[in-house]
Image: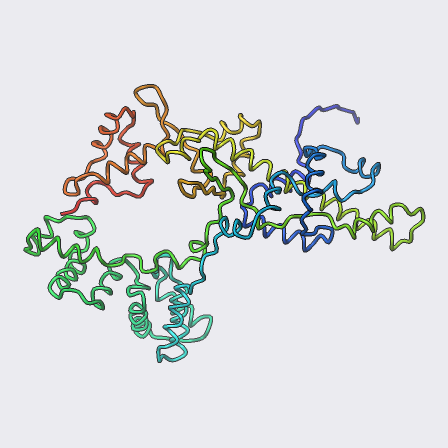
Length: 485
């Protein structure tokens, strides 16, 4: 027997406009520019055009806050479409109208173009008098280098891939000879398979003192493990060297370049960071602004808007005109919400950045040591937003200030309690820890236990394992590996 049953449930759904806003919110300034250009390509009603100052002022005075729960369809039927009601020109754009080209250049410096290290290596390869088969293998080797310039792919694998996919067979011995020739390209040591090989290639092909070069090669070839673990006493005994001779030999090794790629192999690493915010100090005041002057300033096309209103006023229209009206109406709503989302994004970003500045104002005045403990929840409660919104904004966005360029996530950190009962940021502790390690005796480096004791003396309650955790996060080796002679 069939029956009826009532069930009460509560669910939360995001409208398409809210989803669009959230996606725009997480874009940085460069991605936003690209996203705007894409929207302009698919929506003919969106144009890149600045209002004149008078129109902008009138619009700002009459502008209402954006409410994504408004029933836009009901309003659209009751009101005439007016382009000035939907211009995307908020308070943040007013400076753009009065800015000069010099201001833009100050905010958005253009890095000079340069030839990538990959292109340079390929050019050197083409200058070699090698058969076409070896040229192809050489290109595969160069394209396989990591960001530090090392070949981490096995040479055997490259030879096998060449035979399988290009039907080119090359003996492994020939491939080894080719790799050796590539390793003496500029910079010398490129395409080495490990640090030991990289350093040896440089020693063999650069001009240094013959005696110390001989000793350095012997250390790297026969006593490499003792070298990397800094077992200096064992090296002196095995090689029958004095402290002075060993020190001069190690100084020679330290002059070599352990990263011939210098981080320039990866395109991602070579990209210039464009800050999303600019904080400038003018006299005693700090000015916060969004660095979006290069992003197009959007408006609704007056031509298409006139076509939409013309079709709306007609009582009888043809099927083709109906289709046109429907298309324009859909694109108009899409443009309206896209422009509104851009404006709301600017408002949200400025609100969050301003709150971060207010809570970390000492940092912008005095630097990292003045950084205070702060979590996403602190900002969310201050401006009455969800923590997920704060996370979207700070991820991948940067601020340029008098103390440098920092990712917004940098300002958020947990804290430890001091002996006075105050909290200190873990980033501040890392700064102190780095200063202690930099100032230590290199002949007798400080252990993690000793570093813990020194921090405790400064009133910072911290455990040895926490010291080790912070040291490893800063990529600082243990005391034994920091030892020098």
